[in-house]
Length: 372
Ligand code: UDP
Ligand code: MG
Image (cartoon, rainbow, N blue to C red; front, side):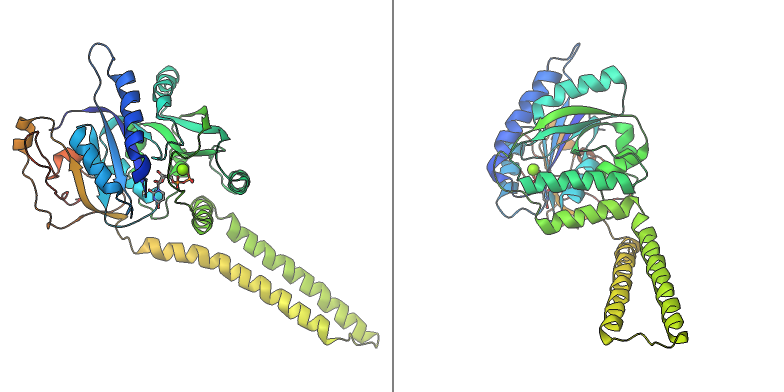
């Protein structure tokens, strides 16, 4: 068995090589400050870094961090799966009783850990979520579209997803256990957490500018993310589709009555243009409705395959002592990669045959075991 961990800090990383060392330094300082001085004994913590198929040497930086700090766990995904899946991978690997999900680009200040833990303790809430008072360093376009998106989402979704909230949140273990049971591929994690219904309290903060590197969210990804959010939690667009159909149908009926009436009174409605306009209008509405159906059908299709959410290439973690290192057999790197189906909680990292190196040995690569 491994030692219990009080806090896991989980950060997905995509091309974050330039800022990762600073990120680690600030997280470690915050954790040592808050947990290192806990009475009667320091509380153990871990930092789970997930490399989401970066192309800039992020994993090399992680490897160095693992060598220098036994708190660090580096999870290497087999390719880029996107922010939400990378975060899911980290959340499934971590072992903490409390879990802090945070971006690796230092937009969410790690120093808020202490105050957030205090809010959780004082209120007894299961989730303390960061709510952005301001967003430094973001383009007007991003701030405006984000504000619009959160308000639109609130209108169409029945559960209470808090406004202006990202994935910066502190969660209790029981919240994470429920989250890890959710199998969906199209994950909108802040919505899934809200869905649990467990008590959530906001924590207002000012979002900093990115410390280094560029955002991994292109406009295309933002649109996809917004569609995922809406379709995961609402069928209002499908209802709107039927509503659009009914409205156009009613207009068509009125048009028909008018045509018949004019014919009865001897004047036939003229004009190719009006007919063509009507055909285009109705054709357009039909295609739009089909498009909405397609969005849902496509998602249903992808979910129906029940593919694993991600593949872990390797997990690096440094054994705290020689004794612990001896008790775990390092697995060869060529072993099968670990896949994780949604809804299956994996064994904690240190219980798997993951890479383990003791202080006097070079780090060796290993591959985690299979999910059950
Ligand atoms: N990220 C990731 N995979 C991706 C894109 C982003 O793991 O495909 C990580 C990224 O390294 C960061 C977090 O997700 O830690 C948030 O991404 P980003 O800062 O690009 O988003 P923004 O803050 O601009 O919304
Ligand atoms: Mg960011």
